[in-house]
Length: 196
Image (cartoon, rainbow, N blue to C red; front, side, top):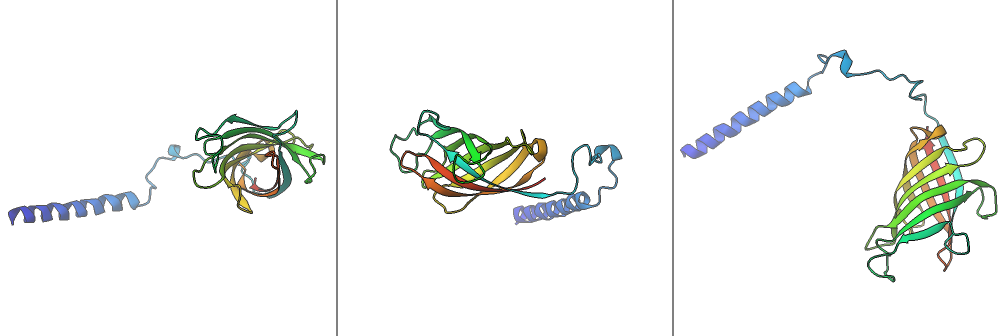
């Protein structure tokens, strides 16, 4: 009985002290000195009103021929013939074009890698920079990092940043496979939406 009363008293005191501490932390922090926060210079940090930009490109993943743009750098450790190719990593420097034909106007390159990241489905972890080579955005990049379940009709991946014209970019990209050949070559349509 005495033990139960002691435990109950300890519990009630703990609840009371916790509520006081919580309330003290939840109150306004006007007492903080001004030097703990800094006002950003919007022009210096390019924090102007955001604008939505949309890009439509075709991504050409070429494993065949004498000038491949995609190569396997690590084969699947679970065996050469697995259902999902789990663990395989491919490095890319893929051509990005304005139209589905790889001979159409080049707008940039997709550089990075993708890894087969699932034991259950054919899914890729995409780590890719879209490097623009056209006049308006020449040298600027958009970075995409995310999951790409390649047999879904439409896939969505996050845009996590960029450089040059696309500094502080955020948004998403959708991809749709247009062509997949037996030699592993493929053409994928990308629609990229970024806030800059």
